[in-house]
Image (cartoon, rainbow, N blue to C red; front, side, top):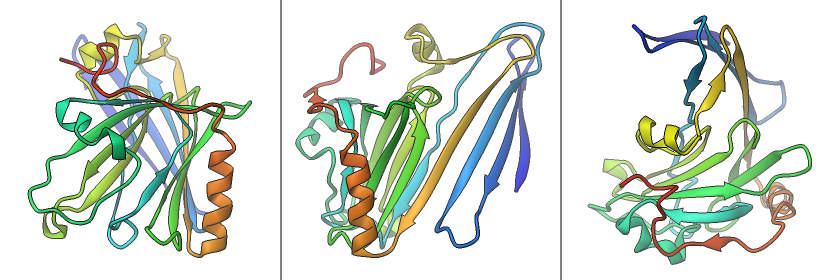
Length: 226
């Protein structure tokens, strides 16, 4: 499946996103290949964030993220309240106020990395695979409110963190595009439906953990917009 979306504004951007979603017979997942094209004769900057949401029944009380985290930063004071449990989930809680965490990840020698979300009993999981040279920023969005109101988490590889564009630009986290140039992005999503495949997928993530994660108790200036 292929599609195109333009992002154009006078005296600002002339970008085109070429998207391709691939499904292979017998594979429980999809592969996304995107290309952002700069249609302008001037240099440009672009942002791209994959807001990949998961809810019930995969997400449940006791679900856990397996992530090769290098650094973990709470976005604000609300997120800092839950920093001790940044990689685990509670059950439904009506009125829950979202918590967001900004991560840097370890990857392999080819700059590829993996993350895994597994249910409380490790009988089912979903994994994301992507390249850190394309998508260096990873965001976790927790919204474990009542199911009727959207009990969900977002796993979000991106070129930058979901701060205002001006802030991310000052931090140098926007994708640079030459005149008439383009940038490529890849994301694979896999589903694991039995304990053995979940265990194998978890091992493939944990092997990337080169050293213990540095977990910051509070927001830090270069990651979190005021």
